[in-house]
Length: 277
Image (cartoon, rainbow, N blue to C red; front, top):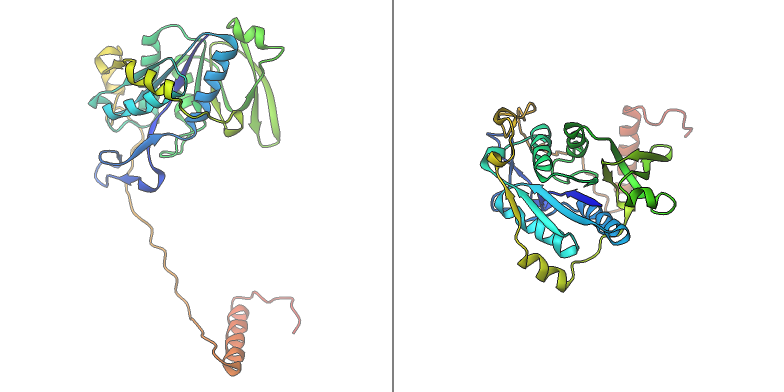
């Protein structure tokens, strides 16, 4: 079976910066990593390939430096990588991003299954996976915690259907869906493996497929910042301030005064109602 894994290169979570003018994330000069939640999708894809055969292709949209994310995925066990990159994609929101990725998937041709992480740690929306499925017109199962490779394994291997368990508020929901489809997975799906030395050598030596805007047969009006219906109107950094009175108690008399002060404060806030002295 042919499996596609949509991944994203994100800034380290403690180094996210926003451009106050454009309202977009600043990625230049910032240390970047593979979105941690995408590693679980990569692991599931590799396990399915090991059990049922086929190939796994990782793909991402981003600047040229995003090739590092693809090579890490290949070092883990993916067979190939596709980088969708062009300045025309700059500033894309989830709608424009999923549209561009859908055109890239159409360009790649036949596939049986698309996997993504639950969400990206930078935007934290969880929208791109389901939007991608909508653009492609295929079913989507979100928050998948496990995939049945037992009795339903034959149907999965033959590219007919997949049986998965979704994480929902009440517990789990068992769903059967026809292929091709898209799954967004949660952490319980599998423990991501580490890249091997052999995998790193393979990733370094294997060329990537590069797709630019002109390769996608896409509507230019739907790409990038101008094709994004959602925009950041204002950016501000909240200031945490604490105003109050600090009482230092160094001896017994000051302790009594501090307690009286605290009781008075709680009474003023009506927080001692119903309590007997």
